[in-house]
Image (cartoon, rainbow, N blue to C red; front, side):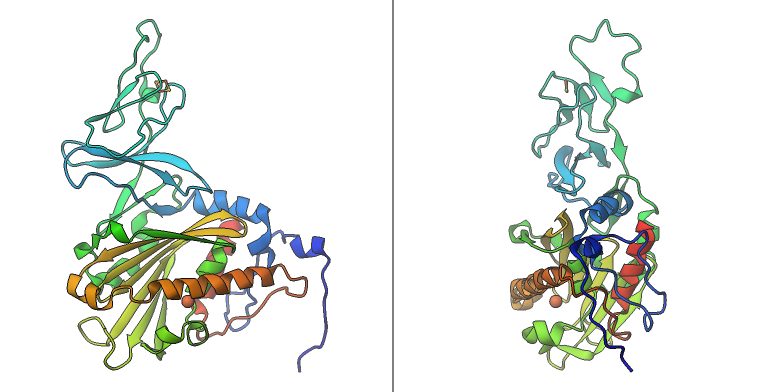
Length: 369
Ligand code: FES
Ligand SMILES: [Fe+2]
């Protein structure tokens, strides 16, 4: 029997973050996170340090296609905002370096170029493409100079196929982060992907970043929110696979709908990597989504299109990806309003369909603990 009770929280009670967010390990018994996870700026501050500053992030920078060069980029603009620069030296070695000059902190690289080195535009300090200090005007009389502290700092750079990743203070290696997911994705032949920059786009909407991830991690909403998508995929065969730091949803195609070659008739692999990366593989290629928190109730999602099969992309590519995106953004913005309700505390999981969502909440709670 259900207990009948109405709890109306005061605003202070509603906002108050518990010391610790507990998510029961058994999805059948678990409650979803308290609403403050999505509304409390103090929790976003903790996420910034404990989740994002320690995570691997997709590193997008427009390096020249080949040969030496450099391209500045910002790690998680609007949250961490770390100025970085991707470089490639004459041997072809690529690096991620700090883009902050070791003299007095000016940003060194301003635009992508085929330059053979870095020159700070403030007082002319020079660096090699591996970050090594080269020269500095008017430092002849400086003592104990230069030292390694005058080199540009380097961050790790790892790859998944053509996709580059970097991290400030990673808790685990990229290989460990991806785990068996990388092996599981062998069917999609990531190496063949080619970025079509003309299709890059970004959307911003009024909801917490984790609500957007929540929505991505369950297909339960598809028949209600995306009727056109529901017509193409076989709902009953929507499989969920959990990995230590990632999850995979596998959608089977309805008869006659586009699918990957090979057994099983897979329409799409929806891979998610903790905390904010989504890799959506279709027979034509990859739609990459990077979720960037901009505030406790503001999120930007960057979309990139990577094409594996140009003919299939012409036929099927992204026909209604924009429509699906707007449907998702509208529903998560609605949920953000729901999270501010004084009549809502926590919900429950649909055990068979929201396992990946439960998995994400367990990982987030553990990272914040
Ligand atoms: S800040 Fe770069 S040379 Fe002075
Ligand atoms: Fe959706």
